[in-house]
Length: 421
Ligand SMILES: *Cc1c(COP(=O)(O)O)cnc(C)c1O
Image (cartoon, rainbow, N blue to C red; front, top):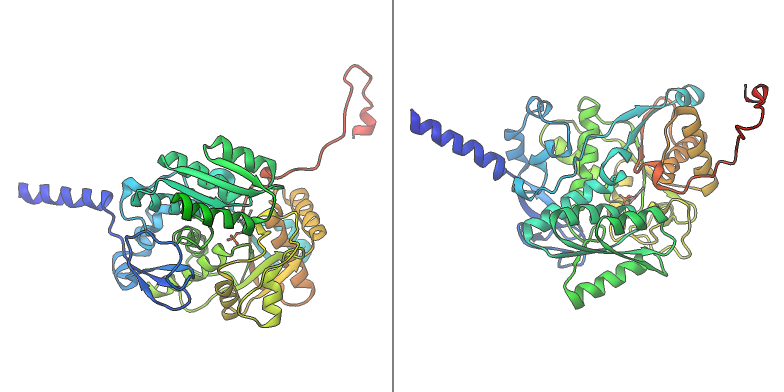
């Protein structure tokens, strides 16, 4: 009796320290070639992104919706579908579930059905935390000492925060006009950060060279396999929040596309474990008119998206001239019956103001782009009013330069309250 109980205790302890994970291997997203799990990887041998594969039949047996419902409300509740094997490798800053907020006034105005997934509540104020908590936890498991990345701001901030917490060095290269607050938070959170007179892909070249010369670990979007696993949790969480169903349409502000590809992967995994059926949302890739390589490729019927020259937009997070996962983004958009759409900066700014004023929700410009794209899609008939849409607000609006306020009041003078009424 006694021995048995001891044994069980030990077993339970193992479950919490040595997670029963289900990773079987990594797979080249282009060729399907298998790569070993539990080894340090960047791109596949074919130079393409690697996707993590799981024993989904095993997950199906091990995990029920009821068991999941009883777990703490954070990203780690989906552990069977995540790559981290040991609890002690998790470098958490509290990856809370993010709310799904209706926009009642705007729904009435437009006659549509709109929910905003507000990712600004995550650590470091953006959904980049989802990806980087996974990448850094895996790096810790592998004993990686120095991580580097090119970033438009939010990814660098998340890398800096988690890497410092894990005791890993980090170096970040940003385009020189990256929002000031991002550069400051990256530096304060313990990374070395440099402004580079170029765009994010120019910064990426410096990282690649540093990898060759100094042995940095290249943490660029889709050049390491685990950020996408973290971003995938947006899809898992969304389906759970909607009672294990999916919305009709997802509007996703697309830069490197990790989130869009990740959610598409999440829905397939959820179907494989029997949590949802074959239904899928239409995936809409939203870009800015000043940097829209995916939209151009989508409209041309192309499989790849060549570099967009002279990229410019106020939505810094989606100013990505060329994406290594282009074919995966375009595939998900097409397979889902979705589309790619570009919105001008003026429409992004107007959308940001409208949602803040009407609904009290301060979106980031990239999030505002999804609302602008939704309105444009209603107007041109690509989305109907009866469709339930989810817009992704990927960061808190507080991380961006905000318009100044010029009203002043001299309290030593008589106050004209009539003018204030
Ligand atoms: C990174 C980022 C995006 C783009 O996300 P991807 O998944 O890399 O396409 C959009 N908005 C913000 C605020 C971001 O930081």
